Amino acid sequence: MASSPATAPGPPTPPVPLTELLASKDLGLRRIAGPADADLLWVHTSEMADPYPYLLGGELLLSAGVLLTDPDHYVGRLVEAGAAALGFGVRPVHETVPPALIEACDRQGLPLLEVPPETPFTTIARAVWGLMAEARHRELRRVTRAQQALATAAARPDPVPAVLHQLATQLGGRAVLLTARGEEVHAAGRAPVEEAHAAGRRPDPEVAGALTRLARVVARDRPGSPSSATDTHGGTHLSAYALGGGEGLVLGLATRQRESGDHTVAGIAVVLLSLLAAPHQGAGAAGRSAALVRMLLGASPAEVAPLLGSTGPWTVIHARRTDGAPADALTAGALGASLGTALVDAGRGAGEAVRVLLGPGPEPDRIAARPGGTTARPGETAAQPARPTPRPGETAPEPARLTPRPGWTLGASAPTPVTALAAADALAARALAHARATRAPLTVDAPTGGLAALVPPEQAAAHARALLAPLTAPLADTLRSWLSLHGSWDRTAVALGVHRNTVRQRIGRCEELLGADLNDMDVRAELWFALRQT
Image (cartoon, rainbow, N blue to C red; front, side):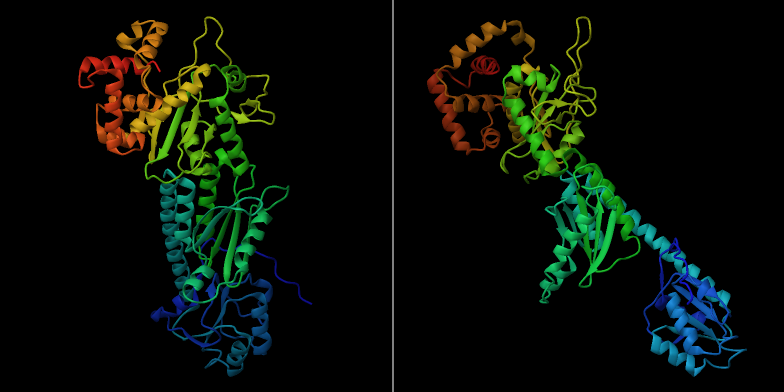
């Protein structure tokens, strides 16, 4: 028994459909037997009685039939070798294509082309290479366009869903981000079975399960897992790619067909998604980070300092999407990554702002949560704080630089020591409200300065408490927002999330309780000074 030919790597160019070669009128080729659909990977000329040992698969084999004695056996060996098609040249050996060869090709499903005497085999080979070059150029253009589209999507404020949507568009199918357990994190596009359902045909309910099983094959939660895998189920082509990182996230794809360049486009998306998902891979990592942020912003200073390993300065940031859409853990994690921190809380509810804790600069610390409540930067132990308190004579670290982020509205506290994080959280919330009301991408709560800084803090706080004593907390917040927005009823309503008439009623009540004319600039200035102390 003859051994099978050794498996060879595929060609560096996309396959050429047989129909494109037949469309070249100058060649004069005519299909006289076998199916019309075939993909050509190579061109090979041979006059051997059995060329099987020298074929790689996918060839258009050209022959004049010099040693052809048994057409049925000859065609069977070509099919066994994986040849794509046979081109038979008439004259000078055979005046016409042997009828027995035509019957054998029809019976065994091998496309048979009649090559006219005036068409040299080298001309056919040159035409195939030219078509391959054109296909390669089309593939490169397609991959380049896809790369640009995916990179643009990765720069959006919701990069993970945007990349998945763009990938689904580029491949014409469905793109899903799955956990190692097969849980869907994000999805975009429609699988071919869903399109069939929309067209009135009943979809295969097992395709989603097949994709989940394929994802588990590549999930990096056990040693030796492959980086990618493919399968076909019910006419749907399935692919799964493991993302980089330790949480086992997997990109799953379901498409109607696999086209040249699809694997390259998917590889670009895998790289982008691995980078974007790295700050908060999986629900567990996002939950730990959110819990840590809440604890740090609500715990006592004595509890916070050992956890952070640094006295600061620290900046608390509140953020909302400019389009009003809620931010999930991965989108919030991408924001944190762009700011240089892993301390992000996006789990307080759809109506709440994302909270970010930004450490000292110029390169902000990244704090990693550990079991038991201790924290440290990656590669450090809890006994070695990420950034120790400066010794006498040393320069304290500068606060991290904060700049606007596309697609986000940010409100930030002024850089503050670790002992004042709770107060900074409230200041960041106010700054975000001010930013939304003024449609500014970033508002930073500035520390007290100028003439106000000349008053001793204890005396200023005592005066503020006495002056504002008649006001309830909601009235004081309304007055603070109204003054910061220069008395604008509409902007204050936006900042507080209430009706403008409610703002008017509250400001009128403030005037009554304080016994002051809020149209007086001196009164406004004194009240603003007092409110800045609270």
